[in-house]
Image (cartoon, rainbow, N blue to C red; front, side, top):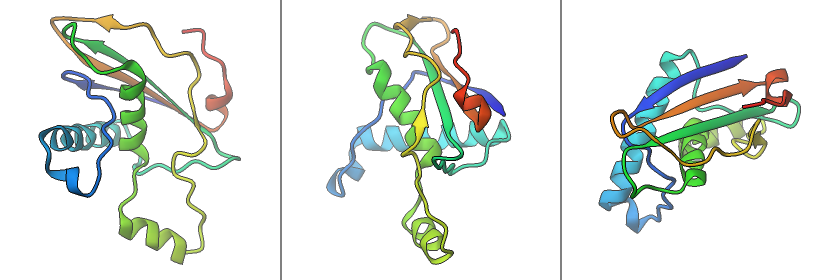
Length: 143
């Protein structure tokens, strides 16, 4: 199955957050963006946090449209989308271990096509996201 949704606003790149760095402005901005990504994914009928296994792969493709010349790296935007869709809280990780279900999270996430060249839309910056599960994740897109 293929799910598509658009995250309005300037794309935000993946941010490495340490325990001490959770209170920085960049970390707060990143976490708010991740919440918005999860909410929009849920509206597109995509259940988060996602999990993928070797037998059930997931392909996540993000195409960012930047609103200016200063922006994060395209690969970091892709990583941020994956992080938002697959991140588990400590309680969820503990619960999955107790339930006896192995949790691979994003270890087997792939992309169906190469990352796009940098795209600009000064009037409407956004990130277009496409998530393909199972058999659709193996199909090679020509995009």
